[in-house]
Structures are given as structure tokens and as C-alpha cells.
Amino acid sequence: QVQLVESGGGLVQPGGSLRLSCAASRPIFVFIAMAWYRQAPGKERELVATITNGGSTNYADSVKGRFTVSRDSDKKTLYLQMNGLKPEDTAVYYCNAVTYGNGFWGQGTQVTVSS
Image (cartoon, rainbow, N blue to C red; front, top):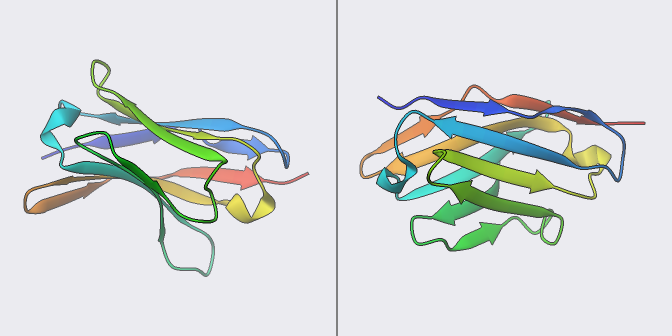
């Protein structure tokens, strides 16, 4: 079993920044890919950013140029640096990790962008 624990969410004003962290209970090299998803009230969960085992990244169009996904293998941690935050970025953000045949989720961390 794998545990993923997100942190770093909070309330921020429009234009502000936050960095989310996702700490894994296993070395992250075991994952084929890791990702950040988000779910706003009344909406479906959507993919925000991914990073593969090889380091390739991909982003939703809505966050390109503002968000950056990265990882620290020594710390077994995935990050999401979020800059230029907008009210429409308000959501619960979830960490996801995929191995061959299994997917794992964290419990989520709330991000609220409001003045």
C-alpha cells in the first residue's frame, strides 16, 4: 500500500502563489507517473499536471505558464508551484501516483483564491 499526504493549501489572494507538496510513503521512482488533479464544487475532478518517471511534464491548458510540477526523489515528494492564482483555481487538489496496475490518491488539500 502507498500513502500520499498533501499539504500547502490555503487561502490566497488573486495573483498570489502557493506551493503544494505530496509526500509519498515509498520512493517515488517506483511510480510510472505522478500527477496533480483538482476538483471544484459541483465539477468533475480534472487533471492539472503530470510528471513521468522519466521527468516529462504535461499541463492542462488552463494552468500552462502559471503552474510547475516537480519532484524531489530524496524527499519522496511531489510539488506543484502555483503562481498567478485565479479565483477559478479554487478547488481541492489531489495527488495521484500510478504503478503498474495500481493507482493511489491522497486525501486532498483545499486551495481557495479570493480577495
